[in-house]
Length: 259
Length: 292
Image (tube, rainbow over all chains, first blue to last red; front, side):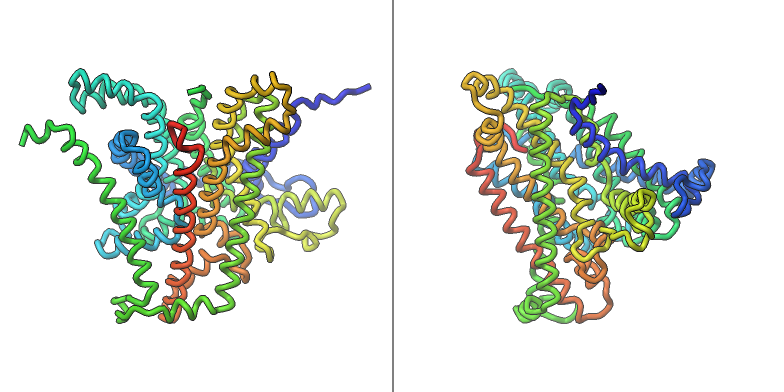
């Protein structure tokens, strides 16, 4: 009699459900011709990926990655001071502050995209790289503030008090005590912010106005177009970058402590 | 001057200036769009406070239906995501599967890529349709009822659930696991059944995070443009798509429609913020050291 090994079968199904769509993109990217009535693809080829190693394409990818890296770093730098102050605020004010900081997540994004577009149009930084980077920073601020301040509450505060009593300056406090303690979260958050910025399409379209091109605005029309093979190739590279960053940075440390 | 810079408070105030400016830009932007939706729009020569446009739009049948449609899609999507995440989380804890990082991968998948996945899998000549054909369930690609661009926007809901479940799971799992550490032994000692344990201990202790993640998902899908545009229905459009089309339109009559839709979204946003604040103030969060 055959006994089916069905331990954790639901978990395996879930993994398959997550992996299949990503796998589908990869499959489509190597299929050149696939008749509906045939079981297997008619023409399979991987040498079409060569198209993606041209100078123009590379420039686009690089500038897009650069925009994401710059906006992630700016977000971290400007969020760190406020994340550090937040745990000192009394509880009642703190919830109010949290809600204010979370506004970009809580309000439907269309509302504040339009608002930012108006303000940027008045100041004249619309359709520029600076505008796009600043708008990405505005989108990402809440994530950075929450992630960092949670960690500072958990690890940093007790040491800060000791340092304060001993008369350590703010600069030294940051450099020698805070940063080493929250280094893990800092790297996690940086990866997460990169992914968020790299995934933004709509805000880039509204602020960049088609002048500033990122990888997302490049593949958007491809996906809606007819050449599914080409679109799948471009998408595959896009998602590969995201998932690699995610595995290296974000998902590296996840532990449960009874704190 | 040097002494001033050594002062702790001065440095702290100086260091939060950049982020304050960005938040001011954000709120000023939202403020401008509120003012404009009440009929004060100097660029096109309107400077009188009026509710006329707003009432006109709210009475418009098409916009009414769009609001209801968007509300239902967002609500259903957020609810399914939260319920699925709770079920998966309880399952993972019960079977003690700690290494399940793969399940968080959808968080890293951008929305436009999710749309691509949906198109590849569910289009009329997509992979699932082909499998159905070869299994003999359908005789032709035309017979395959695609959930893309369908009347009830089911494709949009499925796509949001794919991403939303992973997000809620990443929030809920850590909290549930922590509470499981604390209470499981006690519950076992008292001979509590597992279903009761989940219902009376795991769920109530993570209820606040469930509500807040529901709100975040709801708000996101209420205002996001990509997925509804790419795989949503082309005649029964969702609110963000209508809003963006009216925003781009050169026709001046479309401006009030756009601004009123914007105001509807602001009202939804304010309601969400109020509920969120209530949850933070009264809930289990208050006893915790950190949020989310």
